[in-house]
Image (cartoon, rainbow, N blue to C red; front, side):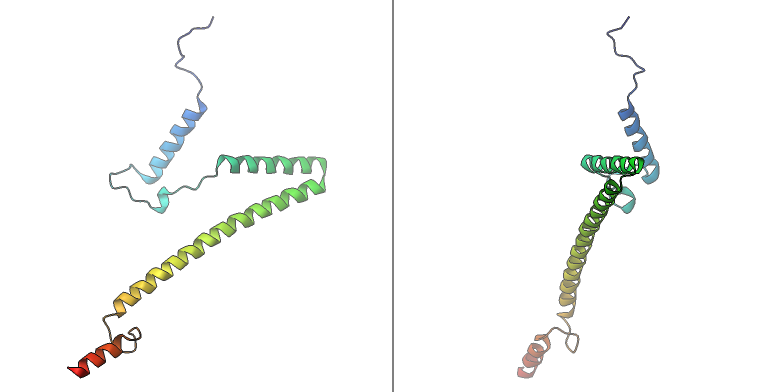
Amino acid sequence: MHSSAPSRYRFRPRARLERAVSAWARSRQGEDQTPLTLESRRIYILPTRAGLVAALLLFVMFLAGLNYGNSLAMLLCFLLVGFALVWQNLHWFTDVVAGWALAAIIIQATLRLTRAGRTGPGAPPGVADERIASASTT
């Protein structure tokens, strides 16, 4: 006999997993407060669904190559994993270098603004000459 009423004791692994992850994150970083600031403890980098599928396929290919003693399957698996790691590191490196370039531009602009009021060897070119010329004419 089946009842048409929904059961209170249905097994819902996704909801249970979401609650467990939420409780873990809350215990790790504390309760959220109104002016939310992003810190390193609040940023989580998780793989996408496509990344998980690719990792699962590579693992299955590795197990099949290992089980059947197929060296070419193992070679292809290790090559694909190597390409994936190089691709990931290439993206990470370009992001880091872009961050360095942005930081260098900001530092350079800040130094120009702070040095604009000074004369002497630390001043930008042309600033000291204009002040000396304006001081000598008055």
